Image (cartoon, rainbow over all chains, first blue to last red; front, top):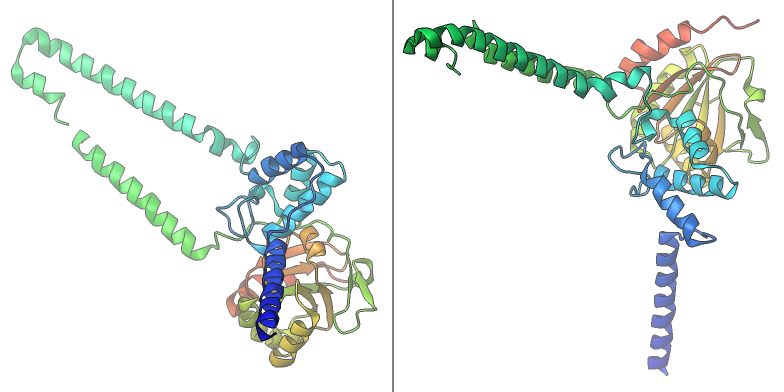
Length: 153
Length: 180
């Protein structure tokens, strides 16, 4: 009798813990696979405002969970991805977008690397021109000391 | 002269890194500038913590400027800013409105019983749903809302004596004069 009671108690405990575990995962009631894929794709493009190196999809912060739920609700209301992104930008600024839009204040971010590349290319061209000018006459003179000048580093 | 170029390059890099360190010590890199500054506060309807049958809305708070302080009993830094708020509340010049964020009402009440209650009005957002409209992502956060219901200033993180003197008080002083 006592053994039976113990088994029953154990079973109830196990049931309780599995219920708690299921609750912690919080499965969302997607209507089909396409919707789930869209949701995963969208939350992976958005940044958690709290843990700033994680996407909303990855983050376990309470706010990320709330925002994921909110995104799911907005999807149920038929909002497009662009509308949902705008909804979050209106509240949390463009910070939430991992892919910042090309705008006046992001020009430096988008085209800065190109600018640096151009400056570097200009420097290379200038150096090559300078060297070829200083080397050619010395080549004709064929003096070894003049040859060294160009390559000290 | 051309031998100096690598050295100058190094100095420029070192200067850039030094600037980065200096900038980061003075600025909170995790604080996101709110897009709601100088925009009307979002519409909300929240119950009072102590009288849940009564609700507060954006409209019901119009006419007087207030400081909306988002806090929770689970938030450690809220305990850091609480004494500062408590000391400053009587002389702040605006009403201090409490916004209890994602908290069990009993926990919030117990926390306020221990730490004191400086709020002239105290609403509770148990689900945290309204807080999304305010762009709240962590507690504590504070919003300065003027008499017309427009958000004029936001601070993310605890209000320290330095923030109070250097940011909050000037922001309150800069509020347009309220209609009397």
